[in-house]
Image 1 (cartoon, helix red, strand yellow):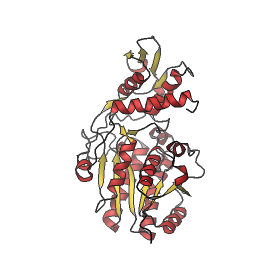
Image 2: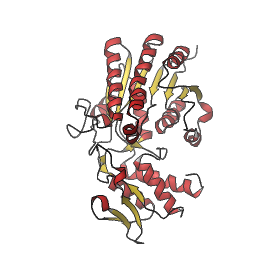
Image 3: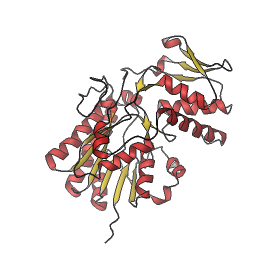
Image 4: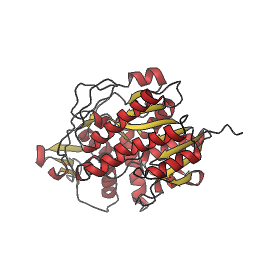
Length: 345
């Protein structure tokens, strides 16, 4: 009998899926990568990580209960990490029903399958700081009241409480990681940090001279590095019992600050002028406008300040973020410039 642990990771083609798979493979796991065959997402991130050949890919869809049941029954995984979701907040306003089904009901399907066919499986749910939304206190921790401000946040809250309920009602080992914003060079380009670094990289190599158009530059987030955060997910499932944890850096920075740090990595010294809809960012050395506000990117309901208190996570899991904000922006910017120079952006 092999002592090798088996883990299923949904959302394997996304940012967190790649980093988590890399971590688990390095510690000897058998990794099953669950992905939706009809998805437009490719395996490029896994190829870039250099781990695609080591992962067993399996068909998976959050809305297909029978498929989930067969998957759980067949593999009886030691650990199940649910990272799959309709994870783009802006899209959730356009697709609220689909978001509710995938991000909310999809988690009920997984939990039911585990309860029925593999009750010893340890389950991790990717919860989100977007559940705090209109924040009731700063910073936010595990007991802070939730007030989601998007269909995405509402659906994730449903899944979050389902995860807690199945732990308390049925004795399953379940964990929710309330992860605050976490970025990396593998972040999707629809997310604001990567939108900035990808656009700036194209400007650096001369592909475009148009400024990067952004929404609310004053929105503040607690930004960490995805590679650090997946280690925390794994640590949650190694404890004696399941629990809920806030995963954050405890520092808050604005989108405007991220623009400044990314600009430094491009050799720019960005200065902002104008207010609200007419605000622009100009490189002082060249006078070139590199950023401008476009109101079409404002959210219908803005989340202004998200700041996590990771005290419980540090105390119980012994986890601390290693990569800080400025280093993160520089890492992302340099990687996108490298990709742009190779024509792979």
